[in-house]
Image (cartoon, rainbow, N blue to C red; front, side, top):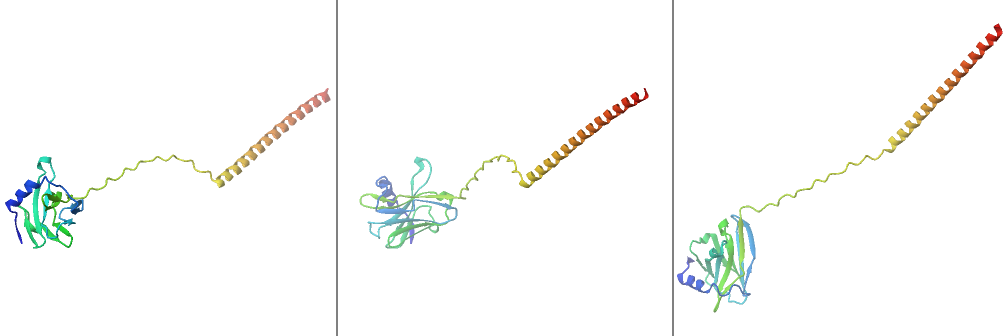
Length: 215
């Protein structure tokens, strides 16, 4: 069964909201939630030292400047009767309340961007209000992607190729062959010059001999 919130309850909230912000009597989890749009969110509130039949109230504090961060009454849940009371403008199909042995549960269906804010569970104690620590709900259209890391270009020094042993061996053999060839040419040139020198000497000696013979 559901009904609109009575004016007297709003009056109680207005008088006592500044009283007691949080207490160990109410354990609220999780501390924060980040969801995509159209997903469901669940907030849990466990009453440790209060009767399990105590009414639980759910409030929301929207984001924005401090003067606009007022509390909105969302709904109340009576676990002993299984009845609920919804705040103005709250659709019961968008918000489901339930409880088990030790916990009160608020389930938000198909969350939208405007559902972002901090959700509090609250019980009316004597003489103060008892709040949970709050659950911060962040509704996003897409999760942020990690920017690709820029890889630094490392210029590699060009290394001279290691000499190939086979190439070195071939080069050595080529140098030896060339050296032998040059040496052979030098010997040939020396031999030729010696032969020419002896030929010239023999010719000169022959000419002198002929001149003496004809005298």
